[in-house]
View 1 (cartoon, rainbow, N blue to C red):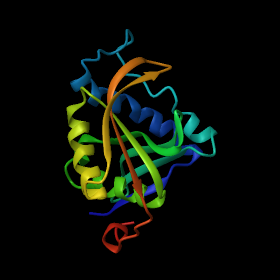
View 2: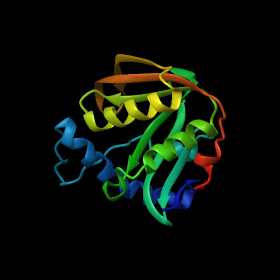
View 3: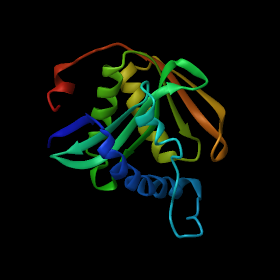
View 4: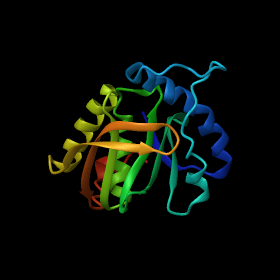
Length: 178
């Protein structure tokens, strides 16, 4: 098992855009979202910004050379000093194998500083994942607050906000798989 986190290139944009409906579909289980009138699950309207803005960072997550998901990192618009996990998706086939954890840790280690992870309240699967990951990574030193997020594209959402700090803790066991 060889997970790999790589910076996505411009040529990866259409591929990641094609994965977005699976990401939205997975969240629909918790969010009670319906497909659009054309029968698709669309979203991530801000996706192009990850390739257009220099402070935004798109990543592909691979497993043994095959795509396992993606991660999008950016400054949080309301607190630009914080690095935000804008989007994080692991394909179902690769879930519960430690791939998400390893890649989240790698991102936290790559960008040391103040972090923010926002999770939709109703997305209990993601909340369990991020609770576990952030608690382990920070050894329990983080702040979790319920807040309302106003998305310019999709409305107002109750969320859990996780704030913490990372330091470049390049641990051999976390980087051996790169």
